[in-house]
Length: 401
Image 1 (tube, helix red, strand yellow):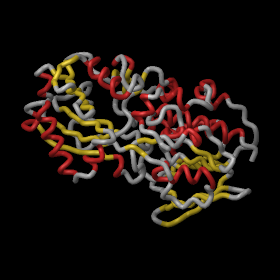
Image 2 (cartoon, rainbow, N blue to C red; image 1 turned 120 degrees about the vertical axis):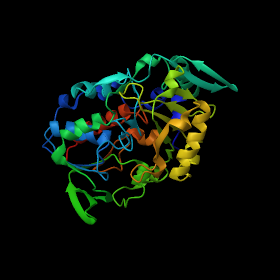
Image 3 (cartoon, helix red, strand yellow; image 1 turned 45 degrees about the horizontal axis):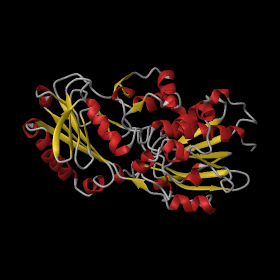
Image 4 (spheres, helix red, strand yellow; image 1 turned 60 degrees about the horizontal axis):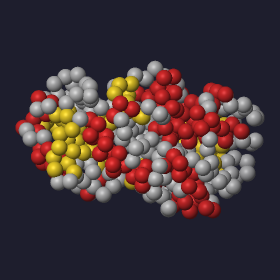
């Protein structure tokens, strides 16, 4: 059965899941692969990080690729919000943190000259609400709370964490720029089929069904969405595991303020609440007087927020954060929310399919291949999507037909 990100992190997820992958296979550039046969026609479903890296490297190897993406943008759950904020401010709806040991992520960051900066501020104090008390702590106290709740995979030394300056979506956009003529946006997949000679994908283009055939199809669509698609080409145990998949809820609520009044009180805007909700100030390194305070709630709290209407999400969060940062209500300007269960093309924030699926037992896969953070040693991370995408590149490149 699927497991939550918290449990995965607590259990030391890499050791649990990496039973079938070796690090050399993960970090090897596709450019070093030896092509085993003629160029193949490959259709990639999804322009998230797994689909983008696979498309980029397969193209480098000379394969004919087409990427079908339901959204009108690349990146999937890597999504930076620029609206409705003022003065060019931005905040992350999805992936934000990059740890220093995620070598694949850093490889492509460096390859595309994507700028990095510290994830956390080194000045001012953060807040912790645990054991019935309110404590002002350094940023290491904030990451210590993450360690205690989610394990070292999410906490530890705050200096080991970075973020992409300008927004995390700069990375998928860098891939997409190099695949511009290969990506078809606003093209949701409705059917996946195959036989001994070819695989076929039916998708909507302008609301009209079209079918494309290929030698190989790489499916990077989250299983939470994939199980709603017509899948006559997927059978046996794989279909069963897809249908049984679960994805965790995550909600984020954003409050823009006229000024960063909390900084004048010596507070960084980061906090960890008694119900395990993270509070970030993503604008601490951004110019201008305005600021954004945002909440990051996981399963248990996220569903409650998701069930509210947009105005209620903002008003309830405003009340809660005003108790933590008195004066917020007077400086509040505009709010926004992102609940990943509501996202039509994600239907959840992250998942882990199963060890069985992760181990890639593809006896019933035929011409279909799978990738995504849910099929990696790093579920929910960009690193996981990239590693699974590269594994699929190897599988496709080495396929005999």
